[in-house]
Image (cartoon, rainbow, N blue to C red; front, side, top):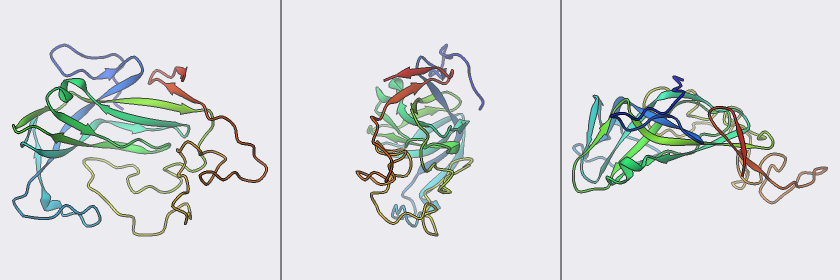
Amino acid sequence: DPFVESQVRAGVISYGLSSYGYDIRVADEFKVFTNINNTVIDPKAFDPRSFVDLKTPVCIVPPNSFALARTIEYFRIPRDVLTVCLGKSTYARCGIIVNVTPFEPEWEGHVTIEISNTTPLPAKIYANEGIAQVLFFESDEQCEVSYKDKAGKYQQQRGVTLPKISAGPDATGCRDAETIQGHGADSGRHGVRGRERPGHRRRPHRRRVVGVDGRRHPR
């Protein structure tokens, strides 16, 4: 939300509904990396001074640097759906790489996007236009533990969100690093990788692609 029901292409980097996914737009809020304060990038103790905040229709990403941004769209992912996000070919052909991690079941919020300029030249990013494509995969059963269930730290995030580290224990109570958090290949009735729960038979895992239009497509 907001949802664009058809692909918009004329004079812009395309966005909106596509054949098997949705092309998301980047908003006009950016955090551009700077080394002016000579800080260290530490995901466990992130220093906000590492970025310069900009609100602009065109963001210039310095050579061999990156920026954080967010989508215009606010997502609400169903409990039986996982998404994968890939960059747009127009930007990829200019050496601009978009990195977004999967949207887990029952996650919701604005998507924080990492935009890397791999070239030795400054690069333009156009706000309110396409930046990446989201693909939706529907499972044949709901996950055992959703992102909402485990009180994920990025749940209902708004705006450009910087790295966080959870202050308390895992909301799922899991101690084993091999425990699946609800979206792995052995998720569902199998709480721990390679280990079946008593009374349940392993079933072949099927995936289906679900389009933004709600249609299911077997894989």
